[in-house]
Image (tube, rainbow, N blue to C red; front, side):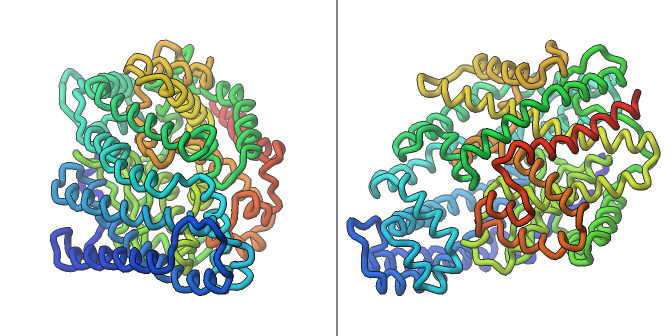
Length: 597
């Protein structure tokens, strides 16, 4: 792994976490929240027994919305800036202390927003939207707040629940991030044993060397086993807290709450999951073909990400940068300029290192700026991941002119631009690829699709089992392992070698440890299939698509998924739509099998 990969530049916001500028920003946010508390008290912003006069609510709304938006923006910048330091080095004690301070500030703000939602629930929202220009601009958010108000506990219970979160789910989540990011694992390669960060060990799953992949798999399982009791305690505590609050807030299950947070409904969720399940035999054919290509009767987990095919490209970081900019520019100059700026202004932290969290993500920093974390590996996969995360950044760019309350995009729609950009580079790479390179590219695409469809279903089934089990008691490490294995067998089936599965995947995936985002995973499946369908619309009519696409991205916090999809003639409640997206993937499977046959 090269050692000259870029780190992101955060100095454009504040000189440092210990700078007067940073502390001044923290104090200003505290003062803003304190002032807002006084305004809320003066206006009686809370759940009301009787609906107040429309003139009063209009005046109050026109005063409140700009103040709320300004505070959210200031707090968002501080959260992103501070988390950037924790994400790349969980051992940074200054960053951890600043993040802890921010958590308390976020708590105060969360309590105010709960009061605001409860107040909106007491109003005639439709009359308010008609009567107030500012309310009309935030119509979707207000309607959501009206619905969510049905699931708000009495004020004192909400205050207690929020305050306990700091020593409950948030604390357990923080513990997970610290333990997992600092975890080292011993691995023996060519007779030499060394200790490596878990993020580096997991990257070895993509190694060209089969023995190295197997050694990394064994080292990973052994590494997770050493911290499994701690992570099991964290997982049990987080899911137990969610179960408790779900019940007290009037949801039938955590899943019902998550579906609502995803801005979809049960019908959409059910038909999507049904179409996904029907595609499992096709993904098993892909995995069986990959096993045969590797000379094996069945595919062990440690070969799940094994490279297939060969590329004449090394995909060094600089080469990936140039290729992404080229492909984005071919779609539109705006997208190409955006990508060039992201690389030029050092928005990307690409080097894997001790203390840095695993995986990749993109976060909005301020205005139209984002920051991207990656653990880059020199491969087509590494390039594709950068393109994916830059897609999130492009989405943020299109949301830049919206107010913070208009930007609240659900996970289901947050993947729209990332999948589109990922597909752009895939199609661009295929256009000039040799046969072996086509195999590599299709393998990478199918590997990702299998993760989004098959593996995410296994994660969903696992989480469902954990929520059910936690209704009775804590689950042991062995029970968590067995639940994960059962979910993998049900989804992967004959596609994998049953002797070599991954019982500790519940420890490896940080998504399980976010108390506020239960069932975090299924929106990724939605994103892949929705993005695939959207790309098909682009191929059908590129000019019309370009005209409407940026407007769609700018509206993802201002309408539900079904309404936004309908702009492209998509019916999310139709099995045929999900089937058509999966048919695109089935076509890639057939092409892949033909190429390697």
